[in-house]
Image 1 (cartoon, protein in one colour):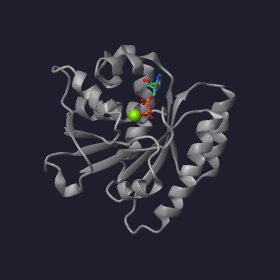
Image 2 (cartoon, rainbow, N blue to C red):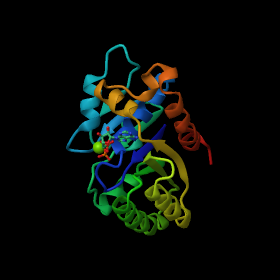
Image 3 (cartoon, helix red, strand yellow):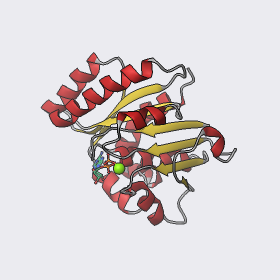
Image 4 (spheres, rainbow, N blue to C red):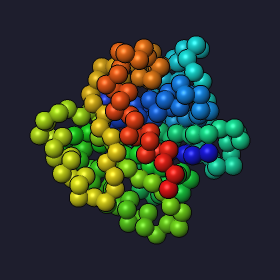
Amino acid sequence: MRSILVVNPKGGCGKTTIATNLASFYAVWEVPVGLIDLDPQKSSSDWLKVRPETASTIQEFSGVKRKGGFPSDLKRVIFDAPAKTQLASVTRLIDMVDVVLIPVLPSAIDIRVTAKFIADLLIKVKVRYKPVKIAVVGNRMQANYKSSMLLEDFLEKVEIPYIAKIRASQKYVQAADAGLGIFDMTPFTVKVDVEAWKPLVNWIEQKD
Ligand SMILES: Nc1ncnc2c1ncn2[C@@H]1O[C@H](COP(=O)(O)OP(=O)(O)O)[C@@H](O)[C@H]1O
Ligand SMILES: [Mg+2]
């Protein structure tokens, strides 16, 4: 089983959007997947509640569990972290996962908060014995936006990979309203968006 934590103390950067869409990706490809909503606002939990019965299955689990605490046939589990997560609890969470995804919006305020979070995180992670993969995902990206370039400049400086650029698209909003991810939608309507997830999923699945 591989577990993935989606985290950034900044609210509204796309944690739930990334977590739910990733869950829908695995579900559509028939990989047994679980979703754990750690946010008291319960957005991914609410999303699962409106997910149509006809859509591919995503199992819900509550609370933080260690690896042995999941059904043995579960292949992927995704943790949707709350905003304002304290570094201490993030480090505890990181001990339980294999992959950490940090969504970032291309705005100066978000980049500053995220840069500080990443710097603190890297200090904590350095003293761990268990390897963990960490990457940044640009969310709501728009070509040629000054702030998008600011984000790219920042990411070049930190030593963690910048694996995908998810564009701002109403498809995410429409999908979320219906308890779906873009992978559940008619493929030709979301072709560009689906394409943007390939490097992200490939990076998660890469054995290293
Ligand atoms: N790529 C995107 N395109 C359009 N809207 C987005 C995108 N990513 C997130 N949103 C919207 O922005 C809002 C905040 O996103 P959300 O995933 O809930 O962030 P977080 O979980 O970090 O607080 C939601 O209304 C969501 O639908
Ligand atoms: Mg959220």
